[in-house]
Structures are given as structure tokens and as C-alpha cells.
Length: 150
Ligand code: FES
Image (tube, rainbow, N blue to C red; front, side):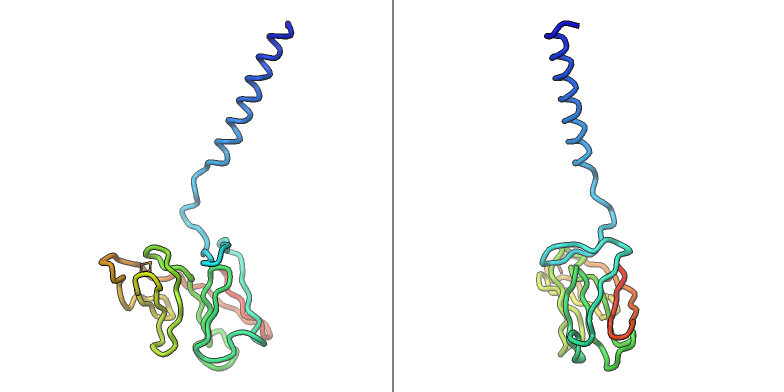
């Protein structure tokens, strides 16, 4: 093989290698993504997110978002039935969800759809669209650590 032929074949090889890496990075997104965090980050399905009950969710009605999960204290005591954990983004168009303690429901900041703490729909979006029930995550407690499994 002459030098020119060798360089041409090498160039083709490099081009194919680049094409391959480009195709592999343009794969299809998962149809079932984990919860997304409005502040960034996701929690892959099957992974866990924990809350320290010594310093968080101390009062009934308090809530917080961690790694795309909305945690709510619904009752006193440190039993799993004292808490709820749902997705933190709205199934309609991804608005941020927050717990409205005075009304005991979860509300979307974008189109005001409302949900129970068990994920059921109380009110559809105010833009004429429709939403679906929230994902609710199972909870466990070990000592003062509350853990949701995504
Ligand atoms: S994004 Fe939540 S109601 Fe539209």
C-alpha cells in the first residue's frame, strides 16, 4: 500500500469512528424518565432519596423538594403514614408542584391544576388542557431517616 492510499483509508476510518460516536450520543430518550428536579437533576427509577427527620419536615404541612420528589408531612409522628411523596413536576406541562397547607392539596404553579397528597386529580389545568394523576413514591422509615424509592 502506498502512503497516499494508507492516509485515505485512515481518514475514512476516523470519519466512521466519529459518525459512530455521534449516533450513539443521539439515542432515544427513555419513555419512563425518573422524576425531575425543578432545580436540576433527576432521580432514576429504583433509586432512593432520603430526608433527615431531625431537621426537615418537622411541622405538619411542611414540604420540600429533593431530587424531583415532593415530600409532605401530613400528620404528626414518624410513621410512613405521616408523610406523602409525589413527583415534584406537573404531568401536564412540567410546572413546579407545591403543597398548599391551608387547603391540603398540591397545586401546579403553571396552570393551577390541583392534586391530593395521594396523587389524585382535584382540578384540571386552567388552560383547557388535561393532566393525569401524580406518581406517588413508596416510603420507608429507619430511625429518623425517611426514604422514598423513585
Ligand atoms: S403544567 Fe401544571 S397544570 Fe399545566
